[in-house]
Image 1 (cartoon, chains in turn red, yellow):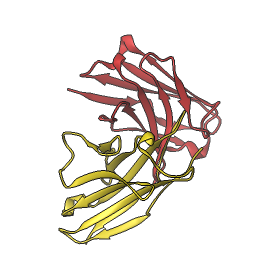
Image 2: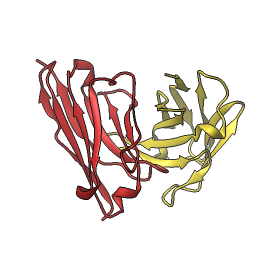
Image 3: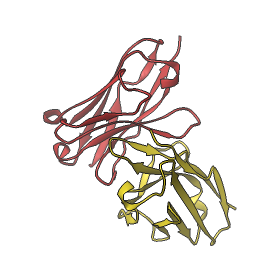
Image 4: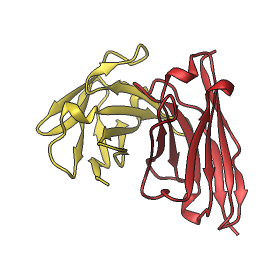
Length: 115
Length: 109
């Protein structure tokens, strides 16, 4: 089955860290760019980060630049988002989504930043 | 980073036609922004309806179409159905990043 499954979300204190994972299956993961997108409770979608198929090209939204790091392991069909110095405003559902026509989204993993 | 604007809410009658638009703070939206349109039902992940201005995925109902209209990207729904009631988001690509619009809540009533 073609799918993306996120994991790693949870409750973390302000200033803490969390690492999200996105497991891909059913397609040739190494051939596609990937994105992380988030959605705060009751709010709209916000693009977070992009990584090219090889990992050689990476970009971030200004809101997370310097705090979040995107990476991928094509041998493991996995995408990651290392989130450091977390703030209350990072509280959101985090989705991974395949690039190139964006045909595939995961169901999301919830991150709550609260003391 | 650029700001992408959408109508906060729109209402359409069942069977009616409605157009949602997507503008950019940097100027006219062109095909070079590779406009996307996404639909999100309550409690669900988004799904992509339109990519690269006017291309549909296999699951995109024929009643949805994408275009450029008056310097904006547009999503037109012709023959609205009750199940089309949802939030709709556009996405525009810039040189090094992409930006979602704030979303349009579409009511079919």
